[in-house]
Length: 391
Length: 142
Image (cartoon, rainbow over all chains, first blue to last red; front, side, top):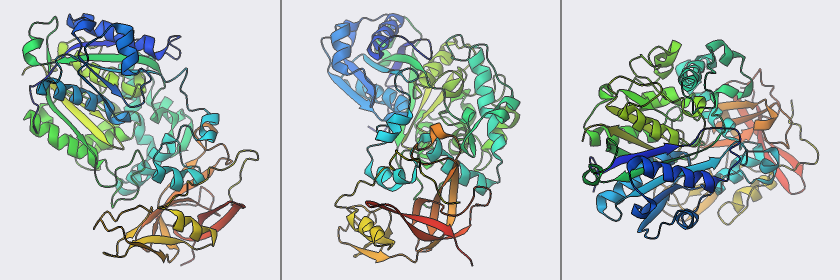
């Protein structure tokens, strides 16, 4: 099966508040969130026969089923790191499309601010490092381990090839914070920034500043996926999976794809874009808003290029002054605030926000947002979705 | 500017294994060598068990010219995003070797305000500890 268009629908969503300290276990947040997503759909834990999680999520399937009283799981699996959110939805869509399960819950829960910060002691012991031996052995001895440094290396080359000044990256975080300021669930509710605040933001790894990077958060999110036929009997207006894809290219690494001919793009995302547009049978012009991976702000213009919203090297110009990418512009992005303006849970909030846009319940609602694109995993293995209000 | 290390916090060691042992043995002897596929001739860095072009597992080690140019670079200026065993600021570079492969390393003698993409560089060997020698790069006169 190379096309799963209209074979699955998202019928329930839930997300906790984003905070610096949830004062709850990750499993507590998971259970709370899954229950709320099932309530949203009009389902109960008894109905659930599939679970999809993110690779490093601390809420194991057996802990979830034991806590929630799910006694009949026929499908469980996981997806990788930052590429996970769209891929988890795809995995769930494949699950219901093939009939191995009927109601699949996708969840992500992390105390990323209070419990799992990348502290200096963790870095010294190497706990935060990837298990990938190629990365460890040939990067770590040179002090090149943090996400910030790994991303900055790619961004520097991008700046060099396209004549970009790093100040220009400030518009994406500015717009994400504008959108996050409207969202009561966000870490930054009623706390917008001005472009000048970005310029004053502390340099972390040159050429990048603090505000180029995601905001660590404690939060959880869950969504419920079933077939379009079953969706008709449930409480919410179904949101259909029209396109879904993952991609890994030659020499793709987690933020260190330095060894291939060009490093000034995100070719995995380009391939994801080709596939989801073809599957959905739509073009970039049809998309009403996008929820891009803004874990690292400078990867947003690169995604706009790879996904065909502008030409290569023009992504930064597309974002300049923010008018085209903010609410009211031609392509509003990350309307809940995203990882920069709402909080970072590896992009699950982006999928939830895409569903809200189609339902018409966003805090930065785009008019007639019938087609929304989600991108996950910029800078490494990537995935993406096109969701729609009509099958 | 030579890199300065924070006493009491060791640099992380390479994980030496069957696939990369030859490379690190070379570094210890102050020789930069790269893996080469004996069948199709592809030069490979970092070492791996199989040639990604022809799938041969028959590999040899060949000496590098030791020269290249800076392909990209970053400057770690904020200690909490840096490795705590190295004093900030420090430079990490991707060097494009004249041999045709790229390598991640540090600059040995170049201050952050002098580095640029395209700077010619050559390898030097930094004997940091009895059990750790690393290939680093310094400016190359052309």
